[in-house]
Image 1 (cartoon, rainbow, N blue to C red):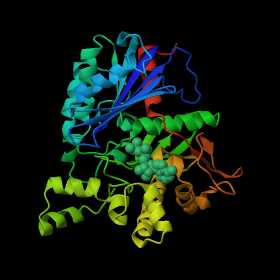
Image 2 (cartoon, rainbow, N blue to C red; image 1 turned 120 degrees about the vertical axis):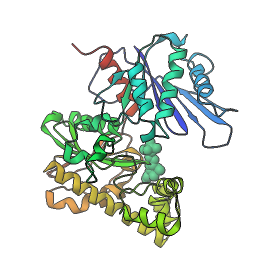
Image 3 (spheres, rainbow, N blue to C red; image 1 turned 180 degrees about the vertical axis):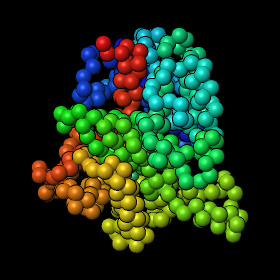
Length: 406
Ligand code: ADP
């Protein structure tokens, strides 16, 4: 069964095609037959299209800002040119979409219909950069692949299990009726890596307390107890929580009042300041990319050193908070760009938790293309570095929804 997965960002659109006709296994993710991406960030008025199928690849620059045109060109690479893997698009049996915001209504994958599209549209004010792109992806695919089932997976869905004390902000009670509450994000990734860690350990997820740390461009932590998210660091928006590449994470909200009153900031300026000019980038003045900030730190740059120290400090605080919500810890998982690749982060993040009996392996820790357990044999907490596979998880969820296991 050929399943196409679409993952829309504010200025990108990634896609993969999986063939899941083989029996489902609880093993590692299987590589896609084809993957492609559209990237609008490089030149104005143009989109960069890349596609790959096995050894074959293709790169094109198209003179359009239009997402629909870009998506049509991207799908053409499935059926023609060097990356062709299908005779016709009608071979696609289902399409899975990653949708950032599903509000409080969705706790699992859903078949897209008018009500689901209306919900995604209604939630645009809560995810203005993402939900419109997700909706456009769905509508373009409806036009191209008439009658092929489409499935939406929400980044918020995994956190639908947050108890009220974790999902409510301590503002006025009326906020709840306005939808101002904590939703949490990166749910597809947190859910996948938690399940994968349990499978690698040969354990049932329902017997474990896991802390999953998704550290990519955006960073969030989740406390997963018996398979359910019971707390997470991102909140109403993906700006809350730990420090990130260019986002600040949690701040004293009094700072915003101060900036508005004393420096005349408006909403758009605050949005740019907190989402794009803060975090590792804002503090170091170097970059939002951890690799470049670490290189500057190694060269003796004081601001880069402060940025990394602050990142680690905030990360440890978040981990401590999640461990408190779990009331215990069996497994710690690191995932996404920084989490999969940075031994410095593993070491420094874990250091204060030695009191829990958490100990990393002796000797030099190294990044690996494989998922790996980096805890010492006698550690009371297992520590896994797991490569997140959001597209694979979406394809699996589509299969499960459309053809549930008997
Ligand atoms: P996204 O959240 O956009 O999917 P990723 O999960 O790909 O992002 O994470 C991207 C970030 O991962 C980069 O900005 C960089 O900070 C970090 N990263 C990637 N590779 C490495 C590496 N080898 N060492 C340290 N950090 C890395």
